[in-house]
Amino acid sequence: MGKKGFLLCVCQGTCPSFHEMDIFEVLNTIRRENIVDFVSIHPQLCADDGDEFLKTLMANKEIGKLFVAGCDPRMQQKMFKDAFKEAGFDVNHHFPVDIRNMTTEQAVDAIKKLIEQN
Image (tube, rainbow, N blue to C red; front, side, top):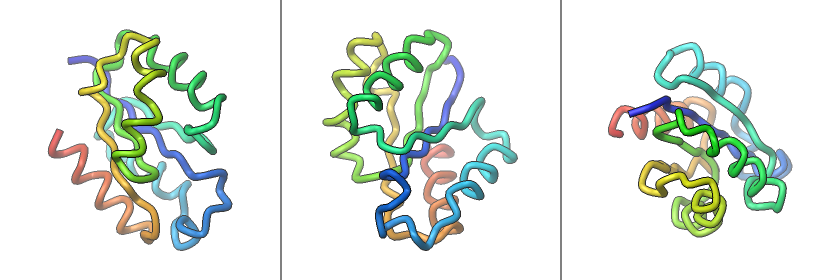
């Protein structure tokens, strides 16, 4: 099915909904557990450079699934669909999870649950 990637979007790092979370510990925990092939972080995927990042990343045809932790899943689907389409990435292989207003542990648990279920 291809490689599995995990992408963390942190709303520029200034959004109050991320203040209870150590974003680097979230990334490191997911990375250390080897449940995905790669992890990455982006400050604001909904910005124009976020589209470019996604198009460039998803042009790699070896990526079969992309798990994205950040804002509301419906918003992610709306915001990223054009970039995925331009990259030729099947939007059904994008798995979003909302981690706003969570602690580090809560975010890790939500992300692990999403990955395990998909």
